Length: 251
Length: 317
Image 1 (tube, each protein chain N blue to C red):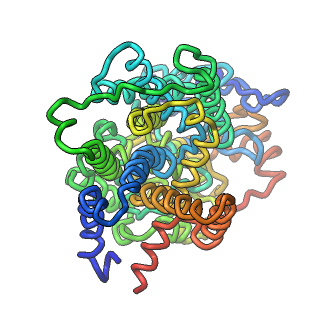
Image 2 (cartoon, rainbow over the protein chains, first blue to last red; image 1 turned 180 degrees about the horizontal axis):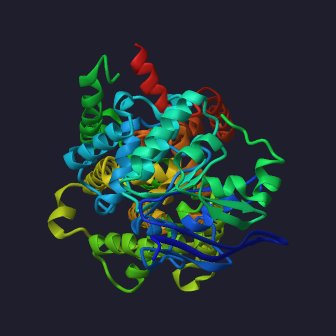
């Protein structure tokens, strides 16, 4: 049985069928890429899986647990974490405070009112460990909003990792990156595969072919096909709707 | 201030507290007896403003119905007086409790909305409370309710000194302020500010955002209710007017004037606003417009409020 399964997911926006009975499975230890032209419904699908958007029909199952009726924050507790296409960090806080906030969410209750958080050594230790793991140790005391784009993206991933996910949803982690930052991000994602399965939404085809074990192609809200890189490259419909007719924005 | 004069920044609040404590003792000698009552009222308003600053400044919840909770607290005292109770402590504790319950019910609905909708729905609830008070004939309705038998704090306390109520209010205000300042640095305080800055990300981090906001809203409502209970004792009179929406707006203005989300924002804003009001009233009947002018000045020159301005000035000198 797969680690993660999306079954018959449907989302309508008025008359538009944005997600059309999507079936998607991610195996343990797998990096599964989701590609598709602009407007194919990739971000909608990520929002349905993470629960930020309510689905009209279908189920989301992780590790045998049906997450469909759970709120987004409860899904995180069950091991489903995500990043954001548009970098979403706490811009006015230091990188350290960003990481502390992420770590705090997973280390016991936040309904603690009197004890000063800075006295909790264990939180600081975990935040620093996370920084080391994601290559942010050098910039711990810088304001997140002043970091270069590549590092902000890294921080975005680090915040999601604090949840110790079993499935990590990466929504275009290389968006807007130059080739150098992209390669660093590829290396970082590669390093994560021993810890968590990854559903990778990405436009950067080089990165996708480097990282993904399997690739699903989403077109008009439907999964056109799923397979390894060779299968997807050779698929005639994929070539016509995606690789052939639209030049992907390789960064 | 914090780098150059670390001692000053730390000692100033204590100096103010000592001055406030001594004020009723020296006021008669200075001919300022009247102002003991004024300071007492300012302290009570500061309690309400501090609770609003907590949800507005730290939690990002722009509630335009906070005076509603002040009113619920005040009318709780009225209800107890009407029922024949006379213990001040019981009355004030009940005021906080009932206002907290009201905040739980109102927050459970309001906190499902955001932004302008949240402002409007909190306003709507407070106006419902206002009209409820207007229609309650047994508690005076439109005319208000006079409390003719003063509440007692306990024989030894009441007999101790004429100004004992002043010190009780001062102690409660200082306690409330210290408590909220402390909570700001706790896990909860950090989570609340995270929600203010980036709610979606907080959800994605796994925080139960709704419950965290509701807890803050209830705490703030309860403290506003406590302020309302104290205000009922202070005025010996309660009327629906104290929960009119303009009162809620006034609390918001004072907090923003002082600096929303700043530790000293609420007390600074209250002190400045009420003092100016008091002083301007001596010279003109049209005391509203200079206050309006001041508000414009602050909006343009210190949009973060007075507290932020002082912090920056302090850092530069």
